[in-house]
Image (cartoon, rainbow, N blue to C red):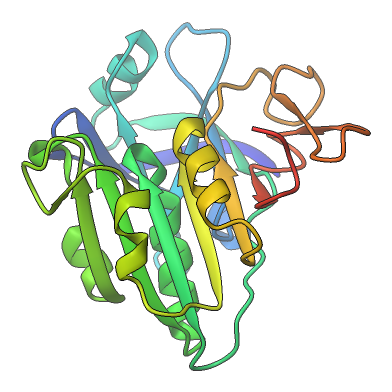
Length: 250
């Protein structure tokens, strides 16, 4: 974990209210792994914004983040321009445990802004010779992003709530179309994760939680969840944001 300045290389709208931002910093980039996040100071806001790492190029010292503009903080973040610097703490959190052997098959299931961290994971797994199948859920057609990028990793199914693009419904509605897989990874809103872990109960899997955080380093207890056995609590920012599928109660 480092506190440093990251230079904005580019800022691009890639879907409705969705921005891809490329940041540069050799120190933070060096240690980033799939599933971790950056904690970004925005304007005069006291609390930083946790944003997942969507991709990382260690040769160029660059990290990509994607975020949806849906409030005062993210509106301010979207206003920053190429060449400006952001005050960042990162990389934070425990990333994905990358199960699977060469020629095994991994299922990636993302919902909305939970899609980005799965892309860096998918790229990393593909480099290890693992087969990737992705199911990506969005609100409607103009919210869809990174379809082509995921297709380059492997078979990709797109689902929209209203059926304006791809399949109509929720990500859980198309899982029966997926052949056998060895492990699954998912990130998205808690209702989606609850439905998913119920449907895939007993399968080897990991979930990454989207959550507002206070400190981002496990000191403030603002983002805790009870463990499945009811004996303790887990801090999403420090113990997570990635957990085994049946480790915490959603």
